[in-house]
Image 1 (cartoon, protein in one colour):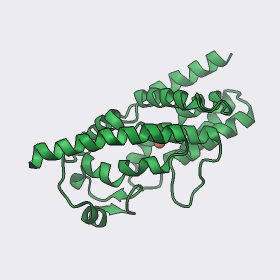
Image 2: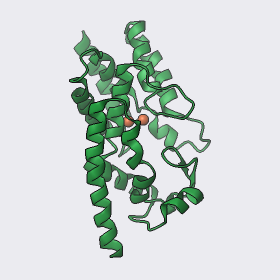
Image 3: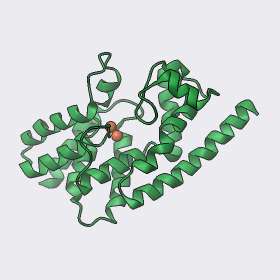
Length: 225
Ligand SMILES: [Fe+2]
Ligand SMILES: [Fe+2]
């Protein structure tokens, strides 16, 4: 029964996710990381996490392409998951746990934070997937999609002031043509380990940041050295 239900969700999600950085491969990677983090947390409900991982980014592309700036893929995703899982006859307690995970997987100042261990594990796993070698690959994929530069030598402090509405971490980029993966690293990725909830997640994130630091250092040397 569970296997049939989860297969159905997988099929549905695979068909829906097309964006390069938030495609089904992202879901599979987050799934793997979450399973690793779960090994240290036997109190967590792995079924809740599995379903939340599958459904967490369904509206990411809708948000990225929304000119009105009103779509929040975490809120919209949770709303959708609620109706979808009800139709699939999941229990209401299970559904509300999954929806909490999806709603809070993107942290915004002043908004609801991950309260449950399941939500914390989804949050950490999702953020870890923007770091390390995968993080570098994803950053350049996105850069290509939006016509960004390979490298920018803008001073980070200045850059934050002129092109990042809202500041470090969650600021919105005003002009994507002035953005680049190394600036994304300086203004966002570098700060991610401090946001994570699990000890194991923070450890992996810090290792991945070290790798990225070396990568961007080498990139700078090759371009400006
Ligand atoms: Fe997301
Ligand atoms: Fe995600």
